[in-house]
Image (cartoon, rainbow, N blue to C red; front, side):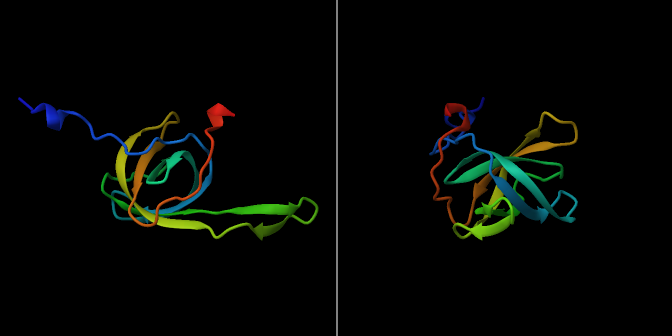
Length: 126
């Protein structure tokens, strides 16, 4: 019999917010092959993020994650202006599940580098 303290899953210290932000993810898949992918967050908090990937990534894998903070200043020139520095951190995969689309996986990452300091309202609350 498993003690009750071990059967209860560890709760997050912060609530994740449903927000779609562009992500650039780099790492190695479960076979050790390096990959780089542009995707978007499904949800986010200061300590981690969830996103969909087409790569087979194992729990415990280390990833590099970047969230670019750029915006267009003029639609006619499509010139990019940097609002703030991009957020860059490292993370460890703590959750892997099948996503809605075949061949994709929903990955949960706990940040092991800098924490995310932005505050967003949930898209579902808008």
